[in-house]
Amino acid sequence: MIIAVNGKSLDVAEKGGAVKVAISLIRHIALAKPDLELHVFVPCEPGSLDQDYPANVKFHYSPSRLVRSQAGRAVWEQICLPFMIRNIGKFELLLNLTNTAPVIVPVGIPQVLLVHDLGFMNTEWFSKSFSLYTKFVVRTAAASDATLVSVSKSTAKEIVDKIPKAKHVQAIWNAIDEPPSDLPNIGFQSRYIIFLGNINPRKNIKGAVEGFQIIAIC
Image (cartoon, rainbow, N blue to C red):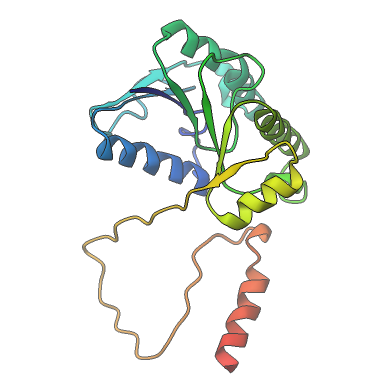
């Protein structure tokens, strides 16, 4: 099977959780299924991403000054990417792993769209332009034949509740990375709770601290 992968955000300087998950999924799918061909399309300079990937992962680059901005990447995703995929014309599926997908120009093959959460609907956390674009893409994909996937049952239910045309959303949980082999043995002498994440307000640090306090009291 030959699969195309939407790599719109893979080369961004600050890689958030969705991009890190996408990179890990590409590697692990390729390792688990060596008979698959994964063709990753990215809007960046040639050779900047094709290191440390299995041999069945191929990169297709489209360097342009246009794609250095968020708006430019959206144009690339909606117009350039479909034409690149159709021009090669041998793919059976398009994987979109970072919340958005081409929905304006038809790609001519089935699509899978991974939606990590609906945080993009909150303009307090994201710019209005980003929020509007992502909502448009997810709603349009839901109304089409795209298969929507989420990383939890709660998010899948939220997508169905807030996007009525998304009638069937499949929940597929994220796995975990292998821990580094050289981790030091810190040897804590008391119980502790660790929070992994940045300090972005949407991470609800206040709620996490309050939850830790409740656990400590118990």
